Structure formats: structure tokens, C-alpha cells
Length: 145
Image (cartoon, rainbow, N blue to C red; front, side):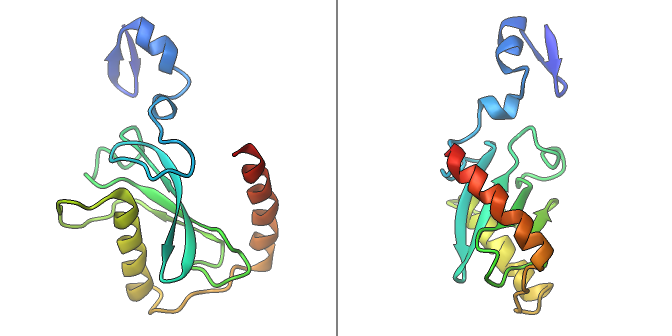
């Protein structure tokens, strides 16, 4: 038996997943993840494209909340976004459980609430130094897909 993140697994399973249990169960890139899966997908919130990186059941937030932690990443750095850096982490999100809510809808509603409450409804310009770093990494990621 081998422990990965505190879960005892038979060695045969552990050897298959030892690089990353979340990677072994991740949703395909660009596909909305299921609850518990790690995922990387894009949503649109009030006209703003946002790339979501969702933590799965092995994520840092998994033991604190039934809702997954996720990060919001700018897709179009030349357009207004919810942060000057093009990135915002959403850990410890709290919401009532509701049937039929999907991970993309959850992320959309959390971002919408953040924009209303924290940003007072105003988007921000991504600072040039961050936008310049984002463009090359997006191009590299596009080549891998």
C-alpha cells in the first residue's frame, strides 16, 4: 500500500497515479470538468472571457468546502478583466448547495458576485507588464492543444 494525499492505495494503482492523482482523473482540456475533477475550461461572464482552472478532489480547498477552489485567468489581456494581473484565485467560496448547478455555472456566479461586491461592477485594465507575459504563455498553451 502507498499513501497519496493521505489515501491508501494498492501499489498497482499508486504506480499509475503517482505522478498526480488529479491528472489521472482530470477533464480533457477545454471541457467543463465534473464535480471533483480537475479542469481547465473557458466561460463567459457578462461578455468577459475567463479561463477557469478548477481544483478537483485533491485540491487545496477540498477539505474545507464542498465547492471546488478555482482560479480565473484572463483570456483577452487587451480587454478589461476582474484584476490588474489577469489572475484571481477563488478559494473557500461559500454558497448554498443547489441541484443542477454545474462547475462552470458555479464559477460564473462566484465571479459575478465578486465583480458586484469587490469591484463595484467595474472591470480593470490588465497592466501591460502582466499582459505582455500572458500573451506568450497563451500562445504556447494553444500549440499544446
